[in-house]
Image (cartoon, rainbow, N blue to C red; front, side, top):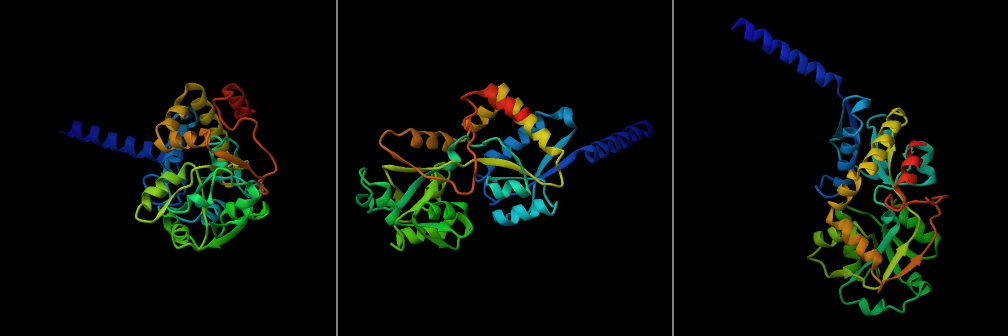
Amino acid sequence: MRHLLYLLFGWLVFAAQSQADTQKIVYTQGFDNEYYGSYQAAVLHAVLGATADFGAAEAVVHPQPMTQARQILTLLNGEADVMWCVTSDEREKHLIPVRFPLIKGLAGKRVLIIKADKQKNFPSTLTLQELKRKTAVQGIGWPDLDVLSANGFTVTAADWSRWSTAMFIAVEKDMVDYFPRNVIEVFNDLELHNNKQVTLEKYHILSYPNYEYFFVSPHKPELVKRVKTGLARLVTNGELEKLFNQHKNHAQALKLVADPKRVTFKIINPHLSYELPHSDWLEDPDAVVAELLD
């Protein structure tokens, strides 16, 4: 019996020590929802799993969902280590970007949510100038608000609640003409708002250079190399593509972008001074890996 107690005590000490030796990598979240951010969180977990040679580490979510501005502040204060969001020159001055497009080039693709009976106002022959004269809505503080304004669109800002409810109400109540939404997020949004008289516009896409990255806190610069190495390994072994394809909205988004019936209006991004040569890592995986490990 005494021998068994010694063994149990030794195991408990070992387990406690192992847990203490495991580094906690805290990431932030915008919503406490099983869909939003689930892919990015899965990639972060896979990155840490693929880099066990850097030491034991575990990704844990910050307990408080928060706005993007608050997430940035949380990283700046050293209260979390990683977040994901679209990049900008300004954000890259304060946080450490891992310049790898997590959702390929889809971060800069926008389709239009319109009132269900208003497709006739958005014919396939609609020009960019005509679209600019219609009224769009975006959330206060969203980068797209400035992007649309800088390109000469008529756009109004709205206070946004969870699931962009205010924007959908604005469309349904004819307060605005349309709501540009990311091609990945739009499917989940429409499902959440299926009780409203809104629909996906059929013929147009807005496109501008825009990339979603992992950003690392300036208090944890040593983490950058691990994240880059993990992403490179996941690209090389094909695991990243598997994770990407596990999310049905990704496949739906790619179909939207490739739809020959849709006219793509290309606009500028005033917040970003560069374009990535490879926004889709499948186009040239060797070059993408070389850029990560450079």
